[in-house]
Image (tube, rainbow, N blue to C red; front, side, top):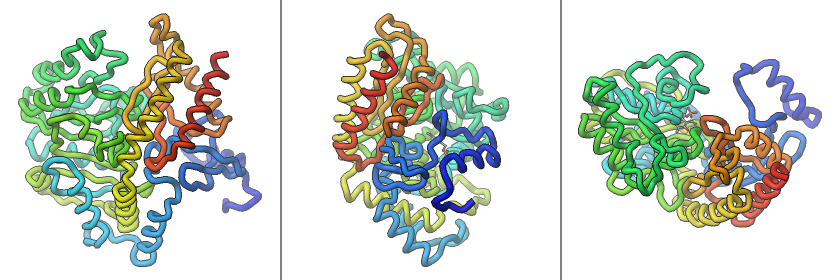
Length: 439
Ligand SMILES: Cc1ncc(COP(=O)(O)O)c(C=O)c1O
């Protein structure tokens, strides 16, 4: 079906239903068939415009059809479009150099793939090769992708289509303060969720581990923000038992959390041994990277190729995206705009105290967790309410995301170059939508 004036969103929806796996779930009761985009706005095939505050899952980091990224992509397309990792190119070495220079600590080497799943796979394999051990700690509520290993790392039943295949993954409690597994509050908890990693290792592993894979903010899990001190304590325990720290920055990287290039940099005294990244790295072009210290990277002795890894067009897109983030000071913009946005969300919580249980996030990665009745301390997840809110915001021209174990968390993540006027539109739309569902 070629796109022509006659083709409508309804036509596309019908063919999607007919030809794609039914499991290829789309957002909304009636899906939005996106056809065009510029900056923070997208337009569907029927000409309806939306303000996009989800960016294809936190991936369109510098706005749709960004001129600088597009120019770099077009120029690269006219030169060479594919080589595989068997041949070096200028874009791949330039990207590796940029990433190593931006990365925290001693991460000095990069390997490129095409998706976040593969980056996490690479990281886990590397941790196992380096330590000579298999067992690994991941977090409940975490998400790592669709492969067999990634599905085993995932801490959500919903995304496990088959039973857990990789027995060596053990899941620690999530640092989910709003629903603390110990019933504690962050100021008086003694970071029990981090401390428990020690007993988890002592009781469910052989006593020494390959590593600990965690995200500074759990994305699909509903933007669960680890409290201060969590990563220092957790990684100290992990290293005591011989493990390396794999920091998954797939959602939190590239300035998303505001004021810092990487989410983990909000935690003092913590250095990843391996770091994974994808999504916002190239404004939507498929590419991911695994960074490691030289000693860890060099422990990969087996053959290691990736057909699409470090594709020159994707690398050119990533180089232009990173130059835009750095050159236009978008890490700082994410902090400034994120603060304005967060203030607006906190005000919404005051206005709708019953349904908005929690507001959380950092920078331009903010979430609202909806519950049955926060005023009565009834934190029963309210996925139906989230679904209705979702439809109301769409009706008013705003696209946001959803997540959380129970589907009751609204995930909001505009482009890093979002402007204040668009944030105000989004906040007003959320306000009107909450008014509609709570009246
Ligand atoms: C933190 C995190 N890691 C890994 C992945 C997997 O990435 P991909 O969908 O590109 O395979 C995701 C995807 O949402 C993610 O959020």
